[in-house]
Length: 396
Image (cartoon, rainbow, N blue to C red):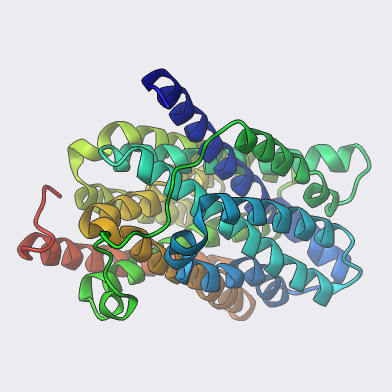
């Protein structure tokens, strides 16, 4: 492949990765708009809804943990093709779900497929832009935010045309088809392990204190992020009595700021440093939620604005991991994302859902502030640990 062809293929791969992440953003964030509709259809309480949505998070726990091994053994092409087919079938299963438990299982299989696609997109960007990981991974996740902006209006549009909430999953297969055609026009890089790769063993990595701390950090980051997405609509509907149109606006505003946050991060994260950037945005996320709760309706928009700050947490942590661990980075990202999916299930769906039922939805958001304070403390410790260790010494 000559330089011109190589450059064009690199651009096509970038577009492929971005489109995959856009698709994941759409499908994953349909939950924000359809939550109240599922409650009405199946006569659920908040805990049952949280348990149902947790199955969009449980599948990735398995896949992310073995993601590095999957890429090494099968390569990107096989993982991508299987992921596309698996996701399309699972989306159709959600659409035809006759009851609560069938829907629950279908969500689980959707999550497995989306996770495989996620692994492929992150790997493509990491391999193609190793000198600009902070910038490009934030840009990659920006397209997740774009998907989140599309999702609530996608659902609302279908409902206005007389379709049910489940049709939003059926019509999402269109995005899968688009990804497939982009894949056919690209040449994916070789990713199978070679004997010269200095990849640390899984057992060795799991004993590393820095790996454990990164996993805890991403566990909380994803838990807080998904909690805001999941419980913003019930908060607006049940606490403030907002209409479906207004709920769509606030959800879309969240993902607009979410997208803006990742765009801005791609421009400044390398200058500020990964850890400092994480710390600043953690404080601003907590303040946004706190002020929205204290002042109520006039400052409710701050719950949506918090998206600009929470958006940068996971991609910046991924960039820090990839820089710190070199050839073993994709494995550690997999471990951290496993922790993140556990955080989405345990914190967002189970713990916050339980708090909302027992106390109030306001109490659930206060819990998020407490989590952000814990996250801030752990990030400070992680920064000191990596800066003081010869293994991780770099400009952070």
